Amino acid sequence: MKKIQMVDLKTQYEAIKTDIDSAIQEVIDSTAFIKGPKVAEFQENLQNFLGVKHVIPVGNGTEAIQIALMALGLKPGDEVITPTFTFIATAEVVALLGLKPIVVDVEWDTMNISVESIKKAITPRTKAIVPVHLFGQCANMEEIMKIAKEHNLYVVEDACQSINSTYTFSDGRTIQSGCIGDIGCTSFFPSKNLGCYGDGGAIFTNNDDLAQKMQQIANHGMKIRYHHDLVGVNSRLDSIQAAILNEKLKHLEQYTTNRQLAAKKYDEAFADNKHIITPYNDPKTKHVYHQYTIKLVDIDRDHLREQLAEKGIPAMIYYPIPLHLQKAYQDPRYKQGDFPTAEKLAQCVLSLPMHTELDQEQINYITASINELTK
Ligand SMILES: *Cc1c(COP(=O)(O)O)cnc(C)c1O
Image (cartoon, rainbow, N blue to C red):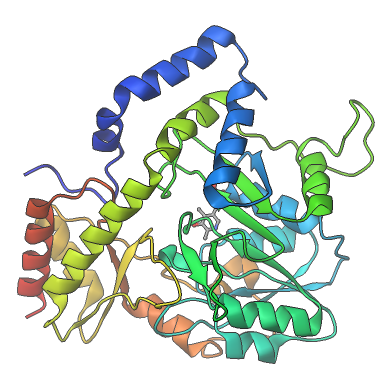
């Protein structure tokens, strides 16, 4: 059996090595390393794939969120609502920009931002909601868009884990994740569902004004060279990464299918295990399984992880500490116990190996081992 990894980038690369190598070589031969034709090509390919008007390639997912928030013209102290159970990036850029991160609880089933908690957190200073489509399925966008409209708030989707996921509204519209709110952000970090071979990210929007502004912010705030009308940053996707992404985008649908098939096999194998709650799949959204995250019931998680490690099975805890309990984000308004669902999830979640190359033998071995160890 092939060695089991959380993510197997090597096997994935080997399957498309010829195309990737020649795409990289082409960039080197052209020496158009920055803002070359490969970047423009990828921009267009991704726009077409997602059905969105503007894609702005940037340096990474965190900068994508930062640039998005910079473009909204918010003032210091303005409040931005985001879930407490997630990766740190969102709250981090909110804080860096002098805005006020307002964290809220998540839903037990989907592990995504709780609509009821958003409603309770809105104040006259609230300016934006940043839902995170955690682990690969969309947050409750129908309700979030409704709340945003009602209170005149911006919605910036963190789609770093959910590229190629979709959300279907009750009127029948199906939209790609990241293309639903005012702005969407994604990351091409190597282990993401569409990953490059270094850092990369992109911003999506259907709004021409915001697109123009974000393009400008990402490029030192200039539209005309050396005329800086806005305070900007330097954030760009380099040509080699764009060339790699052009090749990998061709396989994204297949990669998603592979992940979904692996998830289905896990689901089936754990169906009768009373100690494991398999991922809830909201029928309104296409789950692209960035992670396959189970909830353990009455199981010593650390002990199980150790036992799995001895058997050569990696398993990770995403995420062990909610944002409101992180040292850097201590806030007198928040204390332990304020967001019970997030706190409970942080105690019981476990993410199993999930990638595009998992084979039947590996899945059988992982599931049989876990079922045996949790008997
Ligand atoms: C990966 C990730 C980010 C940050 O992306 P980088 O490219 O690493 O900066 C932000 N939010 C979420 C939810 C992520 O998973």
